[in-house]
Every structure is written in C-alpha cells, then in structure tokens.
Length: 511
Image 1: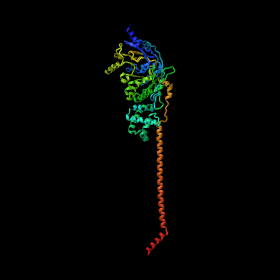
Image 2 (image 1 turned 180 degrees about the vertical axis):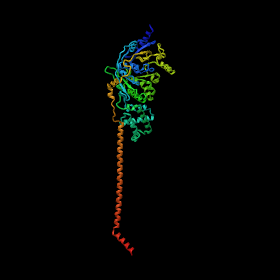
Image 3 (image 1 turned 90 degrees about the horizontal axis):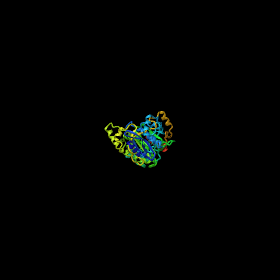
C-alpha cells in the first residue's frame, strides 16, 4: 500500500460523518493535494465554536466566506462582522476562473458559482438595516459594565432603573437616562431620597460624563427604538437557504466602546431569548468576528468577561462563535480553550517573537505522524491551512494540512449600484429604519417639571396677592384710625365749652 493511500485512508476514517457536514477541501501530503481526501466538518459540532487564524494575505477572509456559503446552503443563518468592508460579494455569484477550476479538480469537488441571500446591517449612519436597542433592555448590571463604573455608581444606576420601573418611565435612549440622573439630584431630589435614599451629586456627575463619552462614539444612534429582534438573524429564504447577515463596521474601528456595547447587547439578547437546544444535530446561528485581534486589543474588561462567559454557555442555545484573527495568541486563553474547530493559515517567522508564537501555536494542535506542525505553519500557501475539528462524538479529528475550496460567490465587493439594489430589496429595512421617538422618561419628566414649576409659580403669585391684600388692609386700618382722631380733635375744638373757655382765657389776658 502506497504512503498516499495510507494517508487517504487515515483522513477518510478520521473525517467520516453520519450526519450532514461541510466539506472544506482536501488534505495534502508531502506538499501535494490528495484528491478526495476530503476534510469534512460535521454540522453537529459547529456550535462548539472555532478559530480562523493566519498572517495577513493568507486567505482567512476567503475561508470565512466558504464557511458562510456552505452554512447558508445547509439552511443555517450567519452573522458576519465586516470590519474591512470586503464581504458584500457574498450576494453575487463568482465569475469563475481557470485557477479555481484547477484547484477544485485537485480537491475532487466540482466548482459551482452561486450567489447567496444577504442582508446588510449597520450600527452607525452607514446604509443598511439599523441595529438598535433600548437602555431598559440592557438592564442596570449590563449598562454599568459598559460604562465601567465603580460599585457605588453601579448602585445609583440600579436605583435609577428601579425608580423608572416603579414610576412607569420608559428608558429608551441615552437622553432619557441623562434626564433621570439630572432629576434625581435636582427637582426630584426629595422624592428619590424619601423612597430610595440619598444620591450623591458627585457620583451622578461622573456617570453623566461617562454617558457623554459613550455618546461621542456614536452610541446615541444605537440606543433607541425600534429594538432589533435577534430572531430576525435566523431567517431563511424561499429556497431554504439561511440568510448571511453582514454587519458593516468599517467606520467604527476607532470606537471600541460602541462595538463593545453592541456585542454585549447581542450576546446577552441571544442567550436570554434563544431556547435551550442541546445536541440537536445542527446549529441555529453562527456568528463570525472578523479581525478579532482588534476587538480583543480594544475591548473593555466587561466585554472580555462577557465573551468568556458566553463562549462557555451559548453553545447549548445552538449558537457558534468563530473568531477570525492573525494569531491564536491574540485570543485570550479562556476563550481559546473552548474552540472546537481551528483553521490555521500560514504564519510568518520574521522575528524571535514570531518564532515563539509559531511554537505556541503548534502546541495547540494534535500531534500527527504525517506533519511537522511548526514547519508546515510557515510553508503553507495562500488558500491552504492546517485544520483540526471535532467529530460527531466530540473527539479531535486528525490534523490535516488542507487545500481549501474556493468561494462560490464573488471574491470582491459589490458595486455601489449593486449595493443600493440589495438595500432597496431588504424587507428588514422597512421594519427597522423608521425613526421612532415616543413619549419616554425624558418627555414625562420634562412635563412633570414644567407642571411643578407652574404650580410653584401659581403658589408664589397667590402668596404675593395675599401679602398685598394684608398691606392694603393695614393701610386702610391706619387711615381709619387717623380719620377718627381728626374728627375727635375737630369736635373738641369746635365745641361750645372749648370756645367759652378759650374766650375766658383771652379776656383775662386783655385785662
């Protein structure tokens, strides 16, 4: 038996599946592709999360594209975080190329050009379906973690949320929250102190400053209505293909707070609303985080803690998280240890640090009698990768240096006219892109303050009128007393007795 035949049997046995699967490509031996040595990923284990890593220009984004396409074909919806802006081509069929045909002939899988159902989403003012959430949906704990506040300040935020719940004040956007914080230490200070205790002006001032900083990163656009329903990420088209939802993030790379806010909201909402699924045989939703190294470098501590917790818990909801980054060492150990599928493209050994990273990366893969992992990591070509997955029983599959299949869709972006046509055809745009500003805490409290001020002005006017009335009454009383005295004096002076006495005195003086 030839070595290639032994290798083919080794791969075939290690990647045999009973259920549905995705074929990534064919394994390579001694630098040559072994036709029909297909590397297959069972759908059953795709909710065990994964990693796509490799140096710039080695084909990570195309691997992501291949996975998204094949998931869609299997009826599994996908959410892609498009930080570089190069994934919209999934909506158009590949034009094909002789090199693609040659690649697929080696792999043993016929090439077929296809387009896929795509929805363009946006967190900012870029064109696309607007993703929003209300402040109330976050709750006090999650919102405190976003702002990265102290324990005391977190307690104040909890009081504010409780006060709003008790008094039916909807917290929809950031201006609502700011208004309540100002009210708590202003016009409503006595009201809140009576039921909830004293609230420090210094603490509310600090919270307000952090909210303003969040607004400056674009969060004022994110918070509000209409809230995005995560179930809309799980749509399929009329042909039973899962929608590929592409979230455009090209304009928020320098706004990590906004991205952290969105990620916390999305993961928390998915975890709280998706039903427990267990081992159903296929995932409900796959989320890809492209350029994840940017996320981990700039993420808040709250986001890091949340991702680690979600990675451990969310797979039971039928959701898989896939991180696309340059080096596995970019991903925290707490997350890396939970990832079932690893697709490792080539790494470059230019420095001592690079060589150390390659050594650490090699240790994350199963030992193979067919490969020197450290050597293979630096010799892989574009569109080739080391693959290690989990079989249907949750066991690691054999390590396979794989020639990956080419994307069926366009390996380029849509033109402006194509993108506009796609956006105009969106059903979700009609649902979510209308601005809604219904009565909430901001308007209710403003009305309450205006009413209180009007009543206070009315009371002050009444008091002033009563004062004037009292002053007028006193003046009239004094006037009456003076008039009575005058009359008495005149009466005395004009009396006959007084006149006779006065004349008598005058006669005496004259004599």
